[in-house]
Image 1 (cartoon, rainbow, N blue to C red):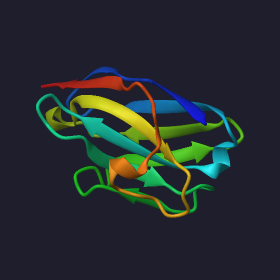
Image 2 (image 1 turned 90 degrees about the horizontal axis):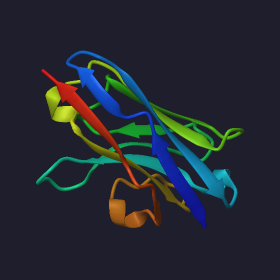
Image 3 (image 1 turned 60 degrees about the vertical axis):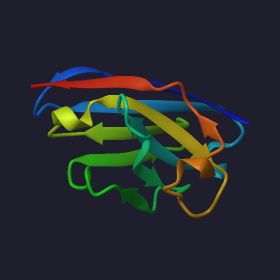
Length: 124
């Protein structure tokens, strides 16, 4: 079992930056690959980024590649999402998720644990 709590969301202007954090408690953090997903109103949840258990491998959706960076600090049991050059279409609730796997899934159904989400709003 692992509990996840996101923070760092907020309101930002177009072109701005935010850094999201997701703190984990419970079972050993390195048991889990971690993912960030987002869900905008009326839209399906979508994969944003994922990171392997020790951070060696990272994965991004095409829509955020080059603008967002996922990282993790296993000593702090925390995963981060650095978001730069934000656009109105990035507006969504951002959720972190954990999966007790080796490979990083892009399908949300493969993740067993979820945080409550943090709202990111990009104003134009």
